[in-house]
Image 1 (spheres, helix red, strand yellow):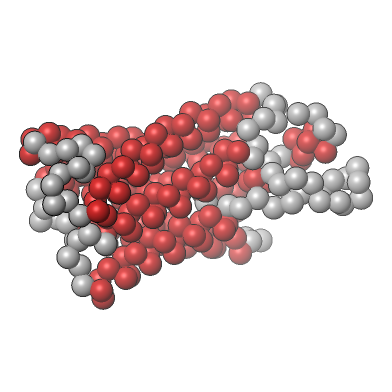
Image 2 (tube, helix red, strand yellow):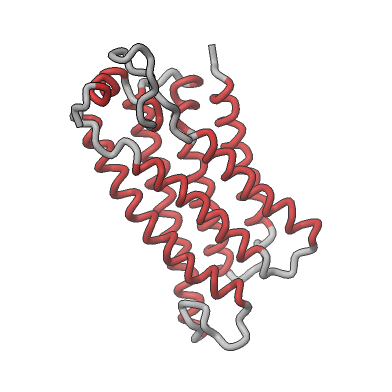
Length: 234
């Protein structure tokens, strides 16, 4: 029987796709490099958000084993990094051709755009770190080790929230009507918050201690790994 979390995860993916399309669609008339930046960065956010909840979709809807679901998660999140790199290249080249600052420090530039540019570098660096840690975690779990079980997921949720906030910040700098801005911002923030809540770790009961709750472990790793955690074998 498909759990409710799987339906919620599927809804997050649909909402992310719809939000990406809605935002990118507003910039189709922009210069190519600027549109490329917007579209690629929106896709990066959509992939990160979808990839964070894809475990339950893969296991509940597609019947994948946890190892295969973990691989799908890694591929989707790696694709997000690629889109982010493309988006950064587009805006870097756009600024270069225009003789503008790569950090938004141009005279008369709105504060929101400066903040967006600076936070953008933080998000990019965080994405690279997260991707590196994620593949290290995948390698460790594939070989039966239990390291990297909590920090990677916690970092990922923080990254999602920061990326969403940065998107809303820059959307606020465009001359959108309130009737347009609010739904776009709600789509980004709402989808992200639901994804973060769905991927928050749940306490796992220990067979050794009669069901006493153990420290949080993300993504409900296989039972044999929980046994090692319960035994203190870290």
